[in-house]
Structures are given as C-alpha cells and as structure tokens.
Image (cartoon, rainbow, N blue to C red):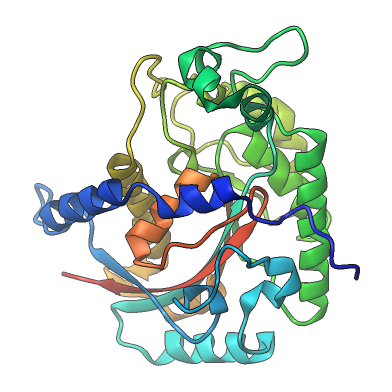
Length: 331
C-alpha cells in the first residue's frame, strides 16, 4: 500500500488533544467528589473505577510520538498478534476477581464534516463570532446536525479498508457498536462497517456519546424519527434516545469538558455494568463483550481519555484510538 493517507493528524488535532489542562483537572476534582455518592437504596451511583492496561497498544506508551502516529500504518498500534491479544484478554476476564472486567474500546472519530469545512474556509474567529449560530451560506449548509463532506466519506472508506486488512489478520468484530446521534458520526460508522459486520449486529445510537452540547448549532441533533429515517435501513437502534427532539441543546451556553467527561464516565459505567449480574461480573458476558466499537467526536474521545487516565493522544479527523480498559467495581 502506498504510504498516503487521509487520516494524518494536523496541528489543530494535536492542540485539541493536548489543550485545556484546566478542564481535565476540574473533571478529576468533580469525580473525586461524586465517585462515592450513593442513591436512596444505598447503592453507588458510579460503582466502576477505570484504568488503562499497558502492553497491548503503542498509543498508551508516553514515549510514542502521538502527533506523527497514524493507526493505518501501525496495525492499529498493537504490540501483539490478534490471537495473542484475544487469548490474554480472555484469560484476564476468566481469572480475575468477580468485580474486575477488561474491555477494548475502539474510539473512532467521525470524518471531515461541513462544520469543519466552514471553519477551514473562514477561520475560528468567524466561527465563534457568527457561523456557530448559522445554518449555512450560499454555498453549503453546515447546521443543524452537520453532515460529512466527500472527504469525510473517503476517510471512513480508508478506515473500512484498514479494518478489512485487520480482520484478515485475526481482528475480532466488535460485539457491540455504539454511535453518537449526530449524523456525521452515524454516516462514518455506516461507511466504515456496514458490509464488514454481521447484519444482526445493530448499532446502538447513544445520546451520551455526542459532542459537547450547546451553542454550536451544528451540534444540535436531528429528531429521533429523522435519525431512524436516515439510518434505519442499516439497522440502527434509536430506542435509547428517550426524547424525540433534542431537548438538551442550549443556544447560548455550551457544555464544558468536566461535564462532558462525567457524561462519558456514565457511558462507561453502563457499558461495564451491563455484563454484571447482581453486582458481580458474568464471566461469559465479559468474554463475549470484550471488544466494543464507538463512533463519536474529538471532544468525546478527549473525555474518554480523562475518564480512563489514558495519556493525551492526537486522534486525526476520521482517526481512531483503541484503549484497553480495566474496570474495577466498588461496593
């Protein structure tokens, strides 16, 4: 394969991945205050602690240059064959205590969108001053619910070819696919996976995986009915969207990193708790659901990094970051 890629990180990707240390610290402070909260039944509201497991993927190694890293040229960054990775994680999930579980979550970022296009054309100042609240101009529309550009589709198709090669090398097809309700993420998932995964492995549209909420009209999602109309033919499950319309979008205020990180913590709490019965890990479910796919946004992935304690890592538009997560359930 010629070493050309549409998934090469930019300086903007790098600054997004490494900026806002204050927000990351604010999340850690908030988490330390709420992690031991209990509900009216005396149960922990956030029972799972998360940490990154080293030795499976290069990306978790602080010595790796994340700005120069492209997963398509690095076999996803894996340090072992897929057979060994699968075997070792199966062993861990089968032999650990009944309050410990391991998962590999593939955090995919959506491809190039109309929102990004207008920022590239007119700059960040124009975006914050006016364009973030507009629907479009005479040339194209970027809001609400920004679509992928042709470049974004090609980026997803490059990931499709990458995944096809990895599957031939023994990569597992994830047991569950979760996707942000914003259509640029949904379309990325379709272009990447629709003919690689089993038809009955239906993607779950998850409100918690969306980008920071508010102010940017491009981040206001379509209605549940519209999402089903656009992606129902691909088996997307929209039942998890409790509200028909986007009742969470606020036109004048925007969610901040600490709040988004708590939201992603909630997603991971639910993901791990699903494989428990009566508060104990179901070993069969843990093994079955070791590999999970998510398709979302740069802010969502940055928040997942905050929650798991992974090192800051640059993920290009359309790129992907695998994280091996050890979850430990407290009582």
